[in-house]
Amino acid sequence: MARRIQKTTSFAAVHFGVAFGVSYLLTGSVIIAGALAVIEPLVNTVAFFIHDWSWDRFSPTSASQS
Image 1 (cartoon, one colour):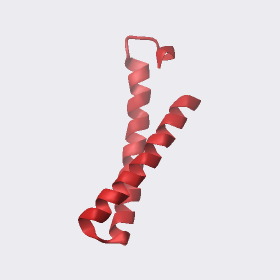
Image 2: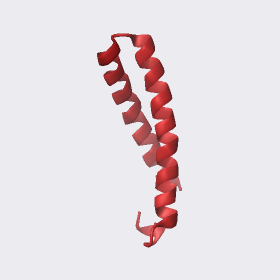
Image 3: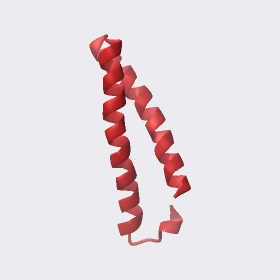
Image 4: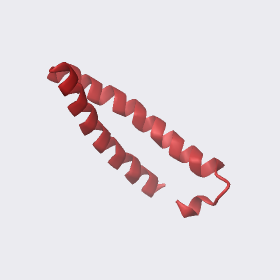
């Protein structure tokens, strides 16, 4: 479980940075880019955590291999 949380946290940090950069390039607004960089990656990070958990739980292989 700790590894999954570390991996999710790392994914979130990268995703926040990318989301802000792309949003800023598209809008030119720090406020809009900041809002998008918080909302979208937050939702996506939760979805990734659930996806990763589901992948381990419902995979035919053992979860210890992840």
